Amino acid sequence: MKKLSIIVLCLCVVFVAGFTGYRGYEIWKDKHLVKMARAFILKGDGANALLCLRQALASNPSNLNACRMMADFAELGGSPQAAVVWRGRIVELEPTSLTNRLALARTAVAAGDADLAIKTLDGVDEAGKQTALFHKVAGAADLAARRFSEAEAHFSEAARLEPTNPVSEFNLATLRLAKTDPAASAEGRAVLRGLCTNLTVRCDALRQLTRDALGHTNLAGAFAFSQELVKDTNSVFSDRMLHLDILRAMTNAQQEVFLSTLQAESVNNPAKASEVAKWMLGTTGKPEAALAWMGTLPPATRTNLPVPMVQADCYIAQKNWSALQTNLAHQNWSAFDCLRRACRARAFKEQNLTSSAKTEWIEAMRATGNQLQLLVQLLNTTTRWNWQAEPEDVLWAIANRYPRETWAIQALGERLYKAGNTRSLQTLFAQASQADNENFQFKNNLAITALLLESWDKKPHDLAREVYTKSPTNASYASTYAYSLLVQHQAGEALKVMDQLTPAELQRPSIAAYYGLILQANGQREKAKKYFDLAAKAKLLPEEQKLFDRARAGA
Image (cartoon, rainbow, N blue to C red):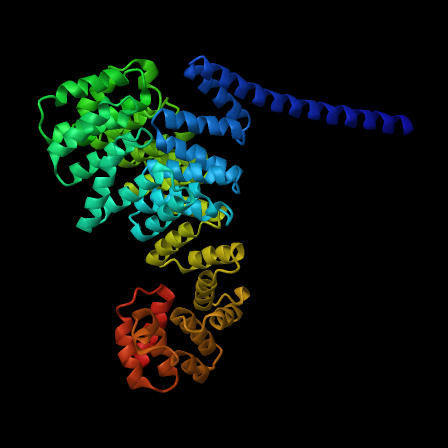
């Protein structure tokens, strides 16, 4: 036995040593791959750099350095949507980092998702919110969301913290330009013209002046500013795409020549090529032309994201579902493979291949890896397609994995409420209340659904009393607590609670329904009829509708 014990102990030591050595090798390999990627970048070999980064992330999806480099690659390549995913992953891994959150917010604004930028910045701690950089990014997010007063407050604070920085002056001028007040717009325009001589913000100023002129259908002015912009060595490809838009709006004969120039420039750059193809699809409305041009691109460009995504959009525009299905079969969209799977699911669904569509949708959900930004992209895509069940699947995944994302819980709650799915609503708000014990709205919703379903294990009476005690002037909380009292055969006490509400609040259809119910229970049948009539305008859950129908019948 003693020998056996020694042998077992030795085997355990060997196993632990072997496992430790294996983990050590994995860590070394991850670091080595990232180091190789940096070396390839210095040599200008982006293809091999990306290959190393993908291998590093396949081995360890939580490799922060690899994620940062992938985000940088996406931004440099002109793919803000891809950059959003990688920067979102970085925030998930290091949620308290100010640098990470500001980077994600900036990228979200560039991708046209101001809502995501604002939500991301909400997570910045108080110390981070005192910095000039925070106020610049927050102001840009608010401006993109057209929240002008909030943007002005942020930009003004940034200017106070950095009074000599021309970026602050540019930001305030851009804000004034966006306002509907003619005097403010004129002032912003004048400041931006003056900033065109400042090398730090020259291109930004010209860009804003171009868009402003185009927005006011001042095509001659837009053309002049745009010409000056594209001649600047610091201009970017999107500036030339904007110039193409202006030429098209002017029906300028140079449009086709300039388009050919941009096509030639983008031949070996997938990000630029996708922008040109999207422009062709969106402006001509002829997906055939965009597909034909993409077909002439070299394989290294044609098969790399985001070009295949634009090809899929073209097939969808054509409603060529069999071509979409076939074209996507052997592709791999890397981090965005969930979207490829979703497109395949749509191709099958449109051909009434229900079983294949369901299988592909399950794979699309699995391919997100439960990463928040990928789930959001999948949600946006399926919502744009007017799908019903699939967005709900995504919202459930977000609510389960990220219970602090209250927007997802609210969106899912609205869907479930509209569908009259009371039991699922109860499940949702039970989870949400557990994750955020201070959210009284969630507790109130859990209380009313549990009362309607008679789920006494959820302790709805205690919940209703707790929420009402915290905020007795809230009409929704009051009506839930009053109904709780009514269920407990305390009709008089329930009426006292409801009578504390204002006449306007009592006439809200959803509140009026419960007030009528309580009035009737207190013998005030004639008065109850008035509120039952108001309640007829309310969108009610099935259990509520049965409850009030019975009450009206007995009134």
